Length: 442
Ligand SMILES: [Zn+2]
Image 1: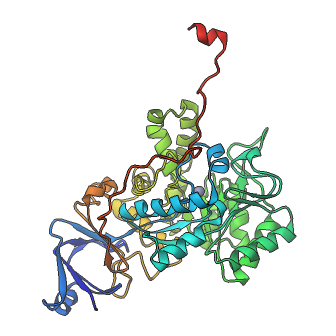
Image 2 (image 1 turned 90 degrees about the vertical axis):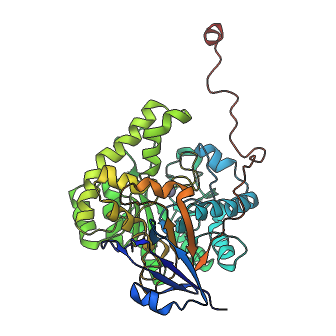
Image 3 (image 1 turned 90 degrees about the horizontal axis):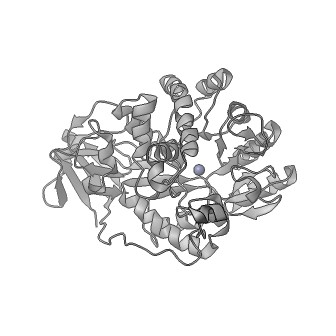
């Protein structure tokens, strides 16, 4: 049966960055049939569900360009790499995907996943076994044997957690082909990492340009884009020259890197939510002051650069790195918009475009979702408030009056329950200090 819904009297922020308008929108099956007067005209009163959105905002569903739905909120790399069983991770990821959807996120990119679970979760959601947002996924992130951001926890070869270590060109070729055969939407490369005794600040490039180019050429020949985790200027430049399709973080760019990115307009996902949460609220969960300062500095040192490339027309995408203890699922998906406004200096309307139209690039659905226009798929939020006045309303789940995904209203009847983590799932330290005699005496 055809199902039509008319949402009336609300103010539409359409995701394109144009001025909001008060008008109706007609959803027919999975897509937006009409907006404005056409919507009212086409909606004959009998077979149309009507929603009165007076005083409310109608906008595209949020798209989070950087989530790790399979990590289940670890508080350390040890927990992430050594405490996540494969099948249980998959089951719990399904639960977490629902949390993300119920927070108004109708699509997300999961660039790499534990045990390569992402592909199967995406397919389970598509088939309807699991309730969750639209997903685009990578498999295991490709790392060289130098490692990534987890140092010596990464072995010299083979698999660990989300990582696949590729030692040479042959292994790169085999792994890229294998992942594409298995259905990934993206190939993910961990381009920069940390080593002991390094001279530079931040992360260093652990891939050669030739290796990056090999991955990009190979993946592109098989119709698959490549995304990289990059936190330094050399990495950004090499990735762009190699033809990479999207860059996560892209911090610490120099002038040459800025010029390159402005030329190619490569989509960038700064992903400051993790840092902002640590800097602003880290104290409440026991993060050290040093640690908090390091992350605050990454935002401070890069905000101006992002402002510059945004003004030059480089698409910035909102991504939150949800999936860690600092960034739990369903809680902080609005937070990147807040950082874009406060630190990068965007208007609220521009930040919304970054979390909708621009972010649709991360799920490879540009021109299908991310804006409210005739013919687009109906992924829509009705928000009880005005995000142009206060962006944090998008983080208040009680203010999400309606969530539509593919034209269907998400009922949210089943409550998100409190859970007790399975035994051995969370890292359980004996203590957070060392019991010397001196400490004991205090
Ligand atoms: Zn990430």
